[in-house]
Image (cartoon, rainbow, N blue to C red):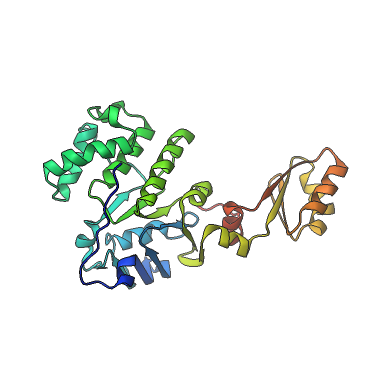
Length: 320
């Protein structure tokens, strides 16, 4: 897709121009329960900011507050230089959104979906005619321009939803679990497209349950749980701060017995989940030597990753 020229609003300071979204002390309650509890963060122009958390952590509520779709009970939000919810409509004109579930119009063709959506923003037909072919090429859908939605695969519909979110040339692209339900090929295609957008200077707010997705795309990550932020930094910095650098996964029928007999004294930190023992260490060599000498015990040695970070900060219990 052709490079998109970044707009600069007149009369704003450099610091303000660099801040696409500012959330300070956000609070949202439902039925007396605090879903979001004093959340604060900022997103700078040109970065991909990841928002991670278990189900029910408050991610989607935070996004809806940022877009002015629900009114917060406390705190301040500034989106694309506009106060939200007071000027939410003006701010949303400069934002593109990819929701969790595709909401394309099944009665329209691929191109018609983009044209109709573009008209919501008051974009004239000549501009749309010039922009839409580039969007379809970006989404890998150039050959499907006239296709009806019922003929598209799930991955194609997801890519069309992403193309639609770009039709207004947004300053901020909000992606709410953009690749959920997609096969690996479709996920990688979308990741490539998002990396291209970041290379062009676009700004992205991403929520995802795929830790590899966050690691590949996010410049910075915020981990939230029970409506509060518990960590925020670059992905590798978060891992280095909170998790031991080496992990040995011991799994199978013998894992629990080995962990209780030997793993605890050889690990700095050990967790058992099902038939797998997760051994966290500053130096894994003593662990590996013990496992190799015993034989018959299956194990995997790897560096710490975002999933380890996520589990340590939010726990292993299942959330509904």
